[in-house]
Structures are given as structure tokens and as C-alpha cells.
Length: 119
Image 1 (cartoon, rainbow, N blue to C red):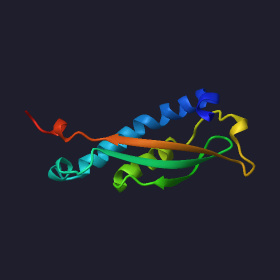
Image 2 (cartoon, helix red, strand yellow; image 1 turned 90 degrees about the vertical axis):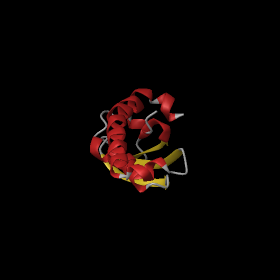
Image 3 (tube, rainbow, N blue to C red; image 1 turned 180 degrees about the vertical axis):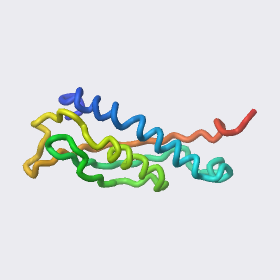
Image 4 (tube, rainbow, N blue to C red; image 1 turned 45 degrees about the horizontal axis):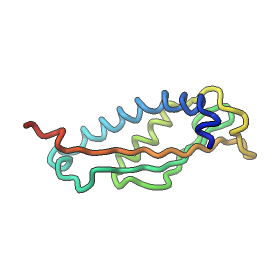
């Protein structure tokens, strides 16, 4: 798959996106009322998205294919790519005929409300 073939490029993406996404999640969680966060009915949310980059590695657009159910979590994923903006040295082989690179990502949030409850 592309992730193995272009490992170094995907590693650069992860390096630029991960901490931005984690910070976005922290900010999203901080905006929820505490009692709402403790009573969430699920323990896992998944956002699946496709990100389009220009041939020189600049962010072009984001397309959500599967929403997690919490817009703030979905937004954290999109904002992480937007904020990173430039992904250096994309492999020319990844550029499609229209001049764009399409990268699919899945962002998973696992929730454990017990971590918020003091014992």
C-alpha cells in the first residue's frame, strides 16, 4: 500500500498532524460540560477523512467520509491538517492526473470516563 511504499512521507505527515490533532481534541473536550463527558454513551469515535494536497504538498481541502458523531472531534482532525498546511517533499508518484495528492486517514478517539473520576 501507499503507506509502506511512501513511508517517509507518511511519517512526516504524522509528525506534523498528530500533536495538532491531540491539542484539538484536548480543546474540544475542555469545551464539553464535565457531566456530559462522564455520561457519553460510547467509548470510541472514528472520523474517516480524505485530505487533498497540491503537488508541492500544500493543504488543498478535506473531505469527511465518516463522521464520528461529535463534530468537535471531526473538526479537530480537519483542523490538524489545515494548521500543518505544508507537507514537505511529497513523492511525485503520488500526484494524480489532476495535480492533487489524496490521502485517506482515520482518526480514532477512545474514551474512558473513569479517568475523569477521582477514586
